[in-house]
Image 1 (cartoon, one colour):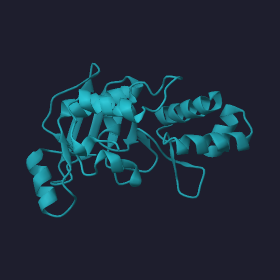
Image 2 (tube, helix red, strand yellow):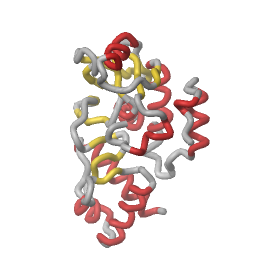
Image 3 (cartoon, one colour):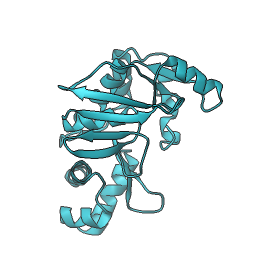
Length: 146
Length: 71
């Protein structure tokens, strides 16, 4: 649906530009549709797991790979920075925006900072490994934890 | 997904009861997943991958076995 694509792309572009999502009201104004229609688009996007809303609100918590809430994954590129949802999504921000940049996150064991650098569209080798605790079939049972 | 310094750090973290043991990914696999999953999100025609497409992506990156089965 065209409205859903408009809303989705607006959310991504605001995240990319501002480092945070638009409010629901800002989205409705920017899209130029009735708030009820935009609310239905938000619901469809949430049901399709494209966005995650703050519980009980129409405001955005996540639009993967971006997170509105602070996480332990900081992504920096071209003078801007964002919170990535997880170790999969954080470099995904750089892939999505086609920019080189740096992901920083503390090792959950020792707390020392780890750095992933994307240069020329490729990840530079460094000493680190990814770890999923939750099997794929259960990722969406608690996406905030996964 | 979390990022650790090394497998040894994952083992220590699991051993300290800070989280369950799951599956490890190399950085190549992690970047392959990130780029394939998110690289086309700004396309107007983007749609979420169907489970079979996601499974095929996992397989292509060597992420196979029960842990990576989507259902």
